[in-house]
Image (cartoon, rainbow, N blue to C red; front, top):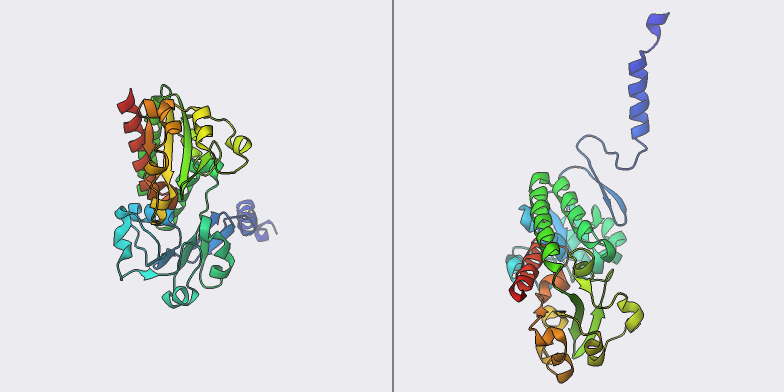
Length: 310
């Protein structure tokens, strides 16, 4: 009679398997469970044909050596210019998919984020889709988590960790350098107008993650989300101005950031007097954002600028 009873170990194993089927992230052998901003997506196996609407994902996939089949028709930074070639399907804009082209591509994986995130549900009906949107108040960590997800999906975990380790080392160096740099203000120029950004904002990782002290602790409260005046910049009087030129990023003609800021009020700031106006690579900051190559390049460039001013 005892011999007919299942062993304790067998019962435990059966219970564990049954329980695992209901846990988040559970996937059958060969399947890949991916947690992302809009839930969980199960991939049947490693994707072979990948479409991405997100330039940050394109940046990181390129750094990992993963082939991409389709990209948006958008201004692409020089270091990713190979994706402008005809061999890569043009699957829509950064915001709107060309559903006919996407469907014809028969992708194994579609990646959205940020601008394209609202299209997640519609694209999910065509192929497995993941949303790699990064929250502004968790920017650097979010970018690293996305690199790890992509590394996991494409069996490039070691390569992803190498990118992350290198970036973390560079960030630590910048944080140390930033201690003596004074306070900074991030501004974006657009059509001759200027907006300011602070901690927790779209570009707030400069403060939150890189250690640049903010010249204004609560920019939203100070500006009510509106464009700021040059008087505001002078009153704030930052030690450093970090400038993003939106028109340059999106290819608009018109006044450049340098032309916009060429006035007596800005010239009277400590930043201008000390030569501490940093013009960010607009494409990397405004279009790409959380790609590992873009982040590494910006961290290195800011460190170089701060050190040159010592």
